[in-house]
Image 1 (cartoon, rainbow, N blue to C red):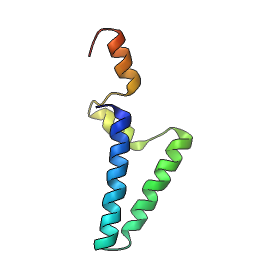
Image 2: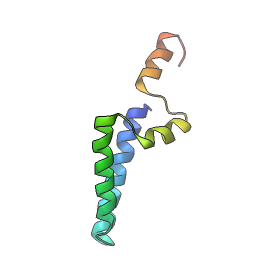
Image 3: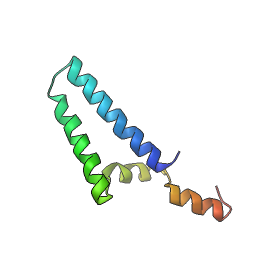
Length: 75
C-alpha cells in the first residue's frame, strides 16, 4: 500500500479511537484528539509528518517511489 494512504488511515484511526475513549472512558482523551488535529494542520503547512518516518522504517513506499519503480521496470 502507498505511504500517503496509510498515513491518512493511521491518523483517522487515532482520531476515532481517541473519540471512543473520550466517550466511554474519560474526556481527557479529547486532548489526544486535539493533538492529532493540530498535527494534521501543521503537516498541511510544513509538509512534515512524524508518522511518515515510522511508516518508511516498515518499508512502505511513497507514490513517487512507486511510480519511479514502475518506470524502471521493478515492482
